[in-house]
Length: 212
Image (cartoon, rainbow, N blue to C red; front, side, top):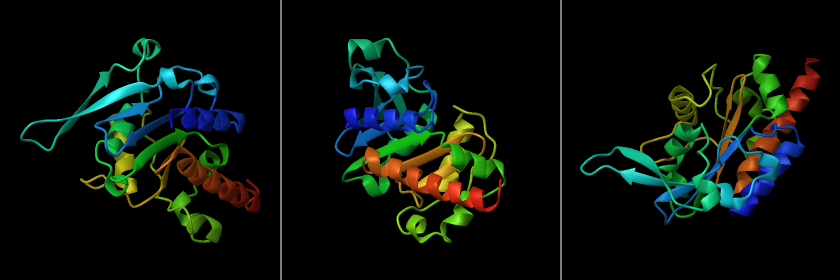
């Protein structure tokens, strides 16, 4: 699925949801104790599978705590660093919750109308029930407020709004971060991406109706 993630990031770039070095994605298969994450500082429109970072998930003995470490993947990958948003991805990938028998993909991009709606003071969760094509397929969490990017605080606030529990279960499919972007989770790259696409479409409609 790394090739598919590359396709997703190229599509996000073409939609102007990210600039060249923005955005990040991770993927974990249920039967593996590692996940892959996009590297930091790489042009996402030319992202290649051999550039991904492989991250091992380590469970401490006699403890419920987890940690992560980089693993060998490819010669190219070894020269790169994992995305700065790794606290967010690690927290969502260390326990897979409802995806424990399949795959979990976490996609973080910066869609224009979602960000504009939050900047205009709209809570993205409040608009979902008014649009059945959104509410039927995508559960939208309340917004995360202003938090520093690539920080543990950003990760923790996303976990809180997604209602992430100790087993990795999440109540919502997508959460918006004010002034920053969105994070979507699903069992394959395109499904996670479609949550973003759906919400972006509705945000565009809402902003047009309010003449913002």
